[in-house]
Image (cartoon, rainbow, N blue to C red; front, side, top):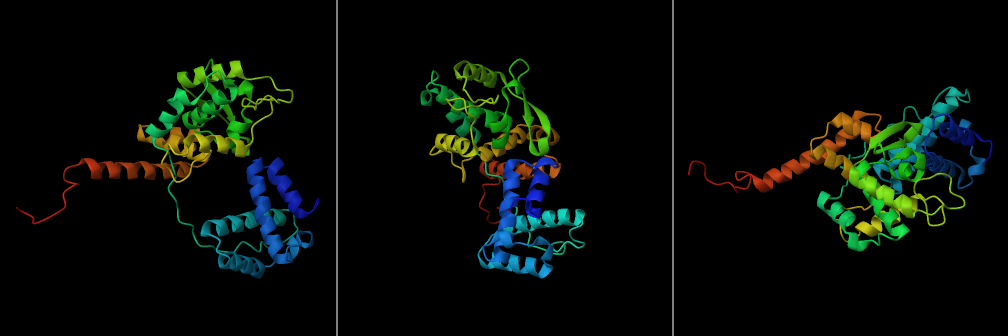
Length: 307
């Protein structure tokens, strides 16, 4: 499929818009799902310029019939809308066939997070780590850095050694769409970084990444997920145990402890304040639960007034 409009679009969002490899792969998957539906599983026969609004509606109906969630349907339609907006911009089409497609709004889910005492117990439990072992120290640092800075898994993997400044206690992070931001960290994480660097071997194919495997090669997404999941499994009571859950935990704990919403937005690298505001719903839910548990009048079962 090299040289097709699909390839040109994916190259455009990768090189010109600066989308991450993970995002580009998601767009590719969504377009492939659509092209596979239209061609009966022969994506090489896909002709995007011949697609009609009726084709897109039929695709949406098939997704729903197959049991796809509202969130999945919205994501795939959004990917197609962006793809066809690009084709219109390139004068391949005059009208975007996805423009008038309306999908059901997905229910907004509150972020999953790990309780503060649970994540701290895992990080601080030195009996679970051999502090002379490179991989043990690295894995503990992965947990601590994800929770202490709120960076994304992709940002942790791509973090460059030169951008980890223990003098200033700062990380220079390359986020979505190649946007750089500075994230501070504390003295305890600084000491762990210094110790990790002392143990880290110089791999033969290392490209300057901060986090590496024992042979010097960089980490990959599934490897980081496995580290987080294995360390938290059985010790944290959360619906999911992943690197992104630690990012949610960072934001939730910052707001619970009085951080300014705008400051948390900057630390997370959110382009919109609205994205960050979802964590205020989490913290308000905590306030409600604490009120119900702690306030004497909230615990009263009710009865005859005036007695």
